[in-house]
Length: 366
Image (cartoon, rainbow, N blue to C red; front, side):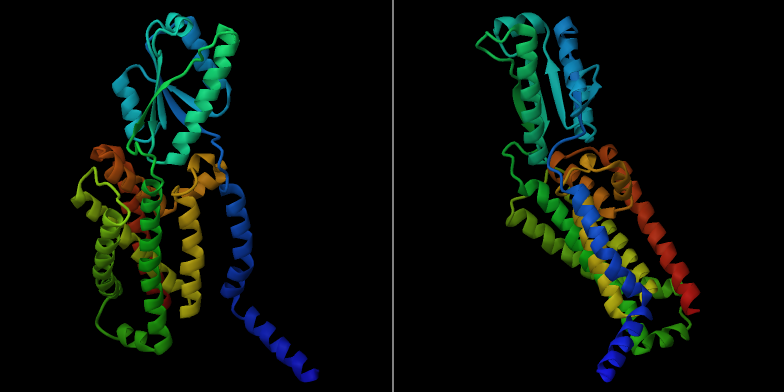
């Protein structure tokens, strides 16, 4: 028993001597519980709806107030149909509700549809949920304002944009692309430098005439070429096997994908400057990147549904901006101005990760 207790104490000291591994083991379950608890929500709590009211009558104003008062939607009043469509293209609104002229008369006479609902179906789950909420709101509004004894109910004629067949693969594949590229690129570079440290070959690089920035570039370029091959393979599978459309530019899609790979490679290199061993680097890459990238990129669960503090964390996730750009290019054929902001954020993140990697590498290994 004495030998066993001595061995147990030795193992405990070994764990304590590696505080980074201990921190990951203790914090990872806590982070997972918090992320899944706050992210796994399928109801719509905060969706932007653009309303173009051509009637501007008493009942149409009441309907807009009813939509706002339900707490499910944030109503954006559009002054023209092009303005409303621009909100839909840029992703600032998930649906457009058009109220026709003579809304009061058409609703009571049921002579023709006085409402039209245009839905962004790039995420089928959000589109169908918004449709159900709006139809329920219209039904309650009909009973309260036009009498419950009328047989016809107030309904909106529906049009689906970007994904008219409501294929869920159109929503999930862009997110899967972001997760796979992030893991492959970050994992490759995070292990690279730590392997050099463990085998001792890093010292050879340090005494060479190469500058730190040259070492980083030399490490990143080969992996960037491998990442280009991965991008081609993944996009080919997306188009051929899963039937993803390409409404926008293939050239822009490739350039943005390479930028995202470079961002992931820089992040992996930053991890390698912090980790002491390959095991720690692998754990930080897999556990620290896969789960947040999957849950906080918006590929499965709407970011608008998350608590505000969690929405703030998504701003530092490269996958959030990459998934948004992919949907703009692949599904919407949006103009460059629609995703220029997201592209700028990715460029900024890549520069920041590269600078921090260079600083850490220079500080720790010089």
